[in-house]
Amino acid sequence: MLKMMGRLCFAHKTALAPMVRVGTLPMRLLALDYGADIVYCEVRMDIYTHTCHISVHLNPMHVLETVDFVAPDERVMFRTCSKEKGRVVFQMGTADPERALVVAKLVENDVAAVDVNMGCPKEYSTKGGMGSALLSDPEKIEAILSTLVNGISKPVTCKIRILPTLEDTVNLVKRIEKTGVAAIAVHGRMKEERPRHPVHCDYIQAVAESVSIPVIANGGSSDIVKTFEDIEKFRAAAGASSVMLARAAMWNPSIFRQQGALSVDEVMEDYIRYAVRYDNNPFNTKYCLCQMLRDRVESPFGKRLHAAQTNEEICEVFGMTDFYNKTKAELEARKAALQTNGDQTEQPKHEDDLITMPVRFERRDYPPQITPKMYLLEWSRKEKLDQPVYETEQRTQDRAFQSTVIIDSKKYRSALWEKSKKFAEQAAAIVCLRTLGLPEGRIGEEHSGLVNKRKRDDKKCAALDDSESAARKRHTSEVPQEEEEEMICRTKVVNGVCGQTTG
Ligand SMILES: Cc1cc2nc3c(=O)[nH]c(=O)nc-3n(C[C@H](O)[C@H](O)[C@H](O)COP(=O)(O)O)c2cc1C
Image 1: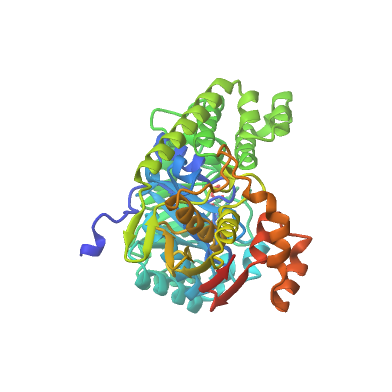
Image 2 (image 1 turned 120 degrees about the vertical axis):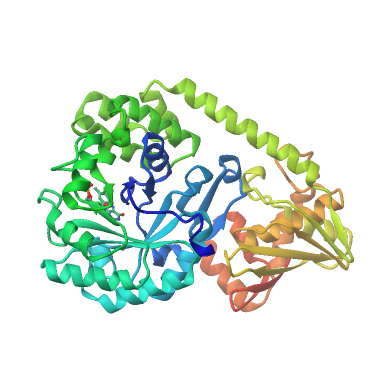
C-alpha cells in the first residue's frame, strides 16, 4: 500500500505522447503549462542510456537546475527538472530485461513512471528486437515488464500498436496486464499502417473493455482531434480512460488548453522561452519550431529560422533578443552567486590524514592545455617531493568517479563525485592546491610561471612503460591536448572501477 502512495495515476488523463526529437524538456514543460496531465519523453534506447551518468550539480546544469543523464560521449540523453518531476514518463526502447532494469533504476528517482516502447515500426528499433518487433514476442514482453515492475518503485507502463486481429490484440493486452503494469497506451494502428490510415477506435475500445487498468487511447491526431473538445470525443469513441496526443500537440501544444488553443506564433514564443531558459540544443529547438510552422517552413520567415545556428540567432529571428540577453544575464548572475556561495563552503575538512572540500573541475575555468594536475605536479617537483599519486573509485549507482591524490603523505579529495575519472583527478588536485594556498592555473589567477616548464616536464614524464607510450602514440592524432596530458601518466584500471595514476 505504501508503495502506491504518491504514484502517478493514469486514469482520466491527457498526455503528451512520446515523440523523438519533439518530446524534449521545453515541449514537455509547455504541454504541462497548457494543461497536459502527463508528458512522455522521446524514446531513449537502452543501449545508449544504460551507460549514462547522472549529472546534477555540474555547471551549467547546476545553474540550469536540471538533472541530466549524460552518455559517455557527453551527449545529454535526457534532461529533466523539478517542474515536471511528478508527471514525466521516461520511455525506453529495449529488448533486454536486464539492461532495461539498469536504465529504469538510473532514472527512477527523477521520473514519475517508466514506459516501454512496443510500437515503433522503424528499422532502427525493430532490427534490435525493440519497438513493434516485441509485439510478436509476448514472452519477451512479459520478461521485460515483470522485471521492471518488480525492480523499481515507480509505475511501469507500455505503449503498443494493435495486432492484425482483435482477438490477438485482446489476448496480448491481457498477458501484459498480468505483469503488473500501471497502464497501457494503445496506438490504434497496426505496425504496417501509417499516420494517414484511420485510427481503429474499435480495437482500443475492445482493449479497454478487456482489462481493468487504465487504457490510454492514441492515434487520433489527424482524423479526430483538432481542438481541446475533440480530446474528449476521441476518448469516448475509443472507450478509453485517457488520451495521448502526438502530432496534434507537436503542431500546437496549446491543444491541451481548456480555454482554447493559442495562436501558433504565441506558442512558438512560449516554446523559445523554455528553450533558452533550459539551454536546449539549438538544432532541437529549430526542429520543434519548424514542426509548428508546418507549411510556413518554406516562407522567408521559415528560411530565416532555418539559417539560425544558435538559440541566440533563433531569438533574433523571433525578435526576442531582449529576452535572450535578460535570461542569459540571469543565468550568469546565478552562476556567479553559486560560485560565491561555493567559495564560502569551500573550507577544507580535516579527518586524520584526509582533507576534503566540495569542489568541481570546470574545464572552461582553465586555459587550454592548463590543468590543476599540471600545477600540482610541477609544485611537487619544485619541492622535491614524490610525484602525486591519484587513486580513483567509481560508484555503481551512477558510475560517477571520486579521486584522492596523495602527496607528501597527505590525502586530498573532493567531496563531490565527478562524471569522469579525468575530472575527478583534477578535482582532487584542486583540493590539494587550494588547501596549500597554491595557484592552480585558473583563468584570471595571477600567473605563477610554473607551467612554462611544461614541455620539458612532459618529456621526462613521457619516459614511461612501453604499453603506455604505445597507447599514447595510438591516440596522439585524435585526442585534444588535455586528454594527452592524462595519457602521460601512469594509469591502472582494475575492473574498470579503481585506478591509480601518478603525475
Ligand atoms: C515526430 C514523432 C516522433 C515519434 N516518436 C515516438 C517515440 O519516441 N515513441 C513512441 O512510442 N512513439 C513515437 N511516435 C508515435 C506517437 O507517439 C503516436 O503513437 C503516433 O504519432 C500516433 O498518435 P497521433 O495520432 O496523436 O499523432 C512519434 C510520432 C511522431 C509524429
